[in-house]
Image 1 (spheres, rainbow, N blue to C red):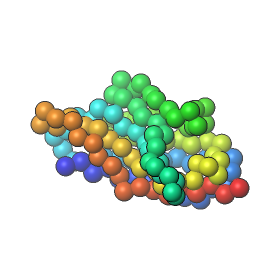
Image 2 (image 1 turned 30 degrees about the horizontal axis):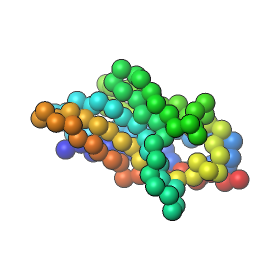
Image 3 (image 1 turned 60 degrees about the vertical axis):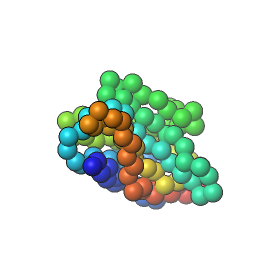
Image 4 (image 1 turned 135 degrees about the vertical axis):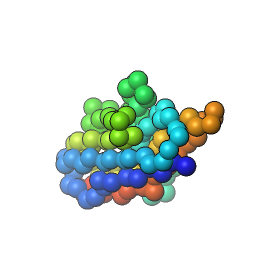
Length: 119
């Protein structure tokens, strides 16, 4: 069992910055992809950014140039640096981890952390 635990959400004014962190606990797994999704009220969950073991990144168009995803493989952790935040970035942000364990791929989600950007 893998348990991602997020931290770092909060309230910030437009133009400000926040850094989200997520650490995966557990054993007997190999992490493939880590990243972040978000869900705003009344909307579907959407991709924000992902990063592979080889550091290949993928970003939603809406956050390119403002957000940076990174990972620390030794700590089984992924981070999201969010700069130039906009009110439309307000959402619950979920950590996402895809692992290989006992020969299969498994997806895990964190509990979510609220990010609120005021105008």
